[in-house]
Length: 411
Image (cartoon, rainbow, N blue to C red; front, side):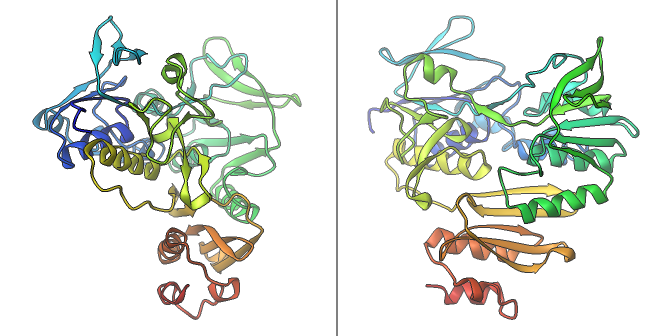
């Protein structure tokens, strides 16, 4: 590790920014170069579809740290610049314009790219994806009272944007090919709750709907479905998921499989190159060391901690159970663990009261929680999953006992 004098980080999102910061905090005195395609210093992405879209937060409050801090800590922040090639043999990164930058250790934090609609008309004015501040800046002026928004895809991003749009007075239709929203990320019971909440707020859903084309000459006017239905639209937001940005990794011959494949230390098939965040797939100890690619703030921060420790020779961080969140209207959904593979679900709280937690079990083992306006249940379940403990299903369902007390009794 003493031979590492120059670290290059490709990707100036949360994962990349956190890595640079934690390298300095860990005592790394060498050169750090942080390369980002956007014109901004690293910033938070989750608020983009929430408070930034609503106009409640400005870019200054999205930044992870003030831009001047990078210079103060001798971190070379290269913005509006794209890395185009990695020469593993000579350990150099080529950027647009032909400049080559040498490295001893390279960190890929290239994130993900939103999937574009594979439809005729998807390039019309008024059709958007949502990934960057620039995407929101382009879309925000159209978010005016009475405008017609069609959201294609009922995942968290789409539903968060739909919630903001309704609060701003837009007419909102959500088109989802599955039979319920959030089909890939939660249970039918929790999905049904959010469907009811959005419907109550005035969102119209077309479930099982298949978009066929985007209509309009220069600007979008409607979304046409395969059954012939036309939904009038002034704005179309594509929320059909993301793909890991692995182009550089593929071109330089790294192992890629739904993300850049790494070991538990975030090291790729090239020991001098690490990969973290949305672009990477690593074995997760909480899930039997299965190779998992997570799109979350938790994963970005944890990857940064792991890489910084590996480069500086510091103590590896204590790993957390994966966590996520979503804000929709006055509802805060907090998630810990991964619900995939559950065979039992136990509730604390009453769904109709808009404050409840759904605990997911595989056999007798607690594997995940979805908590809506129930922070104590979320924190308790997260601690149980993280420490490998569990509670019998009948015990966790006993609402006469506080969650903190139950966690303390768990084995």
